[in-house]
Amino acid sequence: MIHGKNQIFLFLLCIINIFLVFKIFDEDSGLPVYKDLKNKIESVQDKIDNVDFRNREISSEIRILKKNDQYVNRLIKRELFYVADNELMYILK
Image 1 (tube, rainbow, N blue to C red):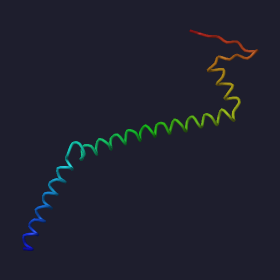
Image 2 (spheres, rainbow, N blue to C red; image 1 turned 60 degrees about the vertical axis):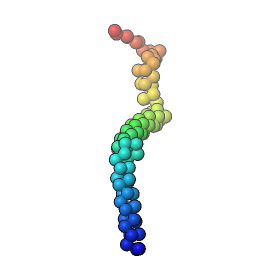
Image 3 (cartoon, rainbow, N blue to C red; image 1 turned 90 degrees about the vertical axis):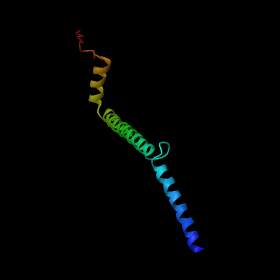
Image 4 (cartoon, rainbow, N blue to C red; image 1 turned 45 degrees about the vertical axis):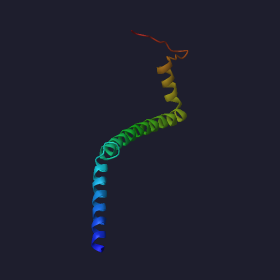
């Protein structure tokens, strides 16, 4: 009788293994989905890295703007076309 129970147990284990192998290659929940999610994670991580880099650049520029008045004056002249009282502006097209 014990021999028969072992055969049933072995049969059930084989069925479970076959089911698990099919689940690994299943398109809805298996390896293809895992690879797709991994690619999405890498893409999002790249975006995070880019935003982090840009954030550091902006922080650096803020520090420069707070400390360097000459830089601020040059930036105002260049971006806003500011002219001091003793200066002339020539616009060439």
